[in-house]
Image 1: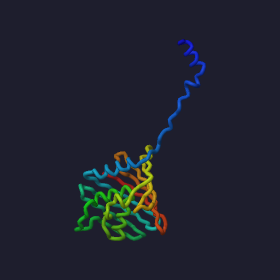
Image 2: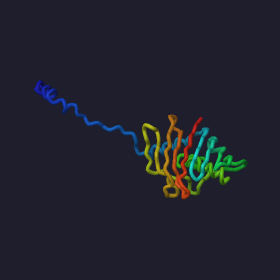
Image 3: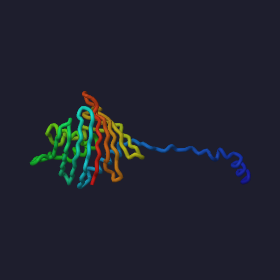
Image 4: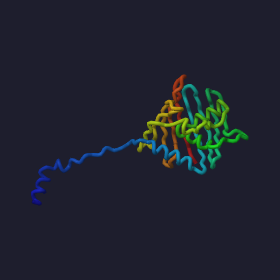
Amino acid sequence: MKSFVLLMLFAFPAFAAEVPKIPAVDTIPGDAEFHVLEARLQRLPAASMRYHIESTGPIPTVVNGELHLDGESVQLYGSAKVKGEDAYTRMPAEGETLPPNTRRALLIGMTRMGLLHNLVRGLMMKQGIDPKPGGADEWVRVTNVVYDLNAHRFTFDIMVEGQQAGEGELTIARDGKPSHRHQIVHFPEGDLTVDENYQWR
């Protein structure tokens, strides 16, 4: 009987060799991973970051600056050229008291729609960090989130007040923090293309 089994294996080697291949998975649904990223940033006791931002479209902008986090304290600086004009912003402004949850609103805004939103408020509107009544969690969301396991990059749709405002990509560095953001935001005047680069330290 044993000899018969061996004979069958050698006589029909193709059957023994045909093992179904499981395709490699490059992307996965990314909602859970995106929430982990946001929670990780919120837990940072202190951190500093340099950034460089460029946008083309209705609001052509080049911004260089720094973000400093220390507990609930937030400082955001930016030196820019907006529509060809030099501009500078500092948030909070001298003597300004930040409303509660400003740090949370800023970090959620950064992961979901980028830093440029709050920087434009300071550079062009001379306003502070946008806290949004009801919380940034409700005001801006990401949907259809996909995570690329090889590139360590999220892709998603950006939803503002329930309406799709654009599409974004967020690349994560080895330390688990965002390193690059690319997005296209839709305006009646045309699409705004934004690239943001972050260097944490």
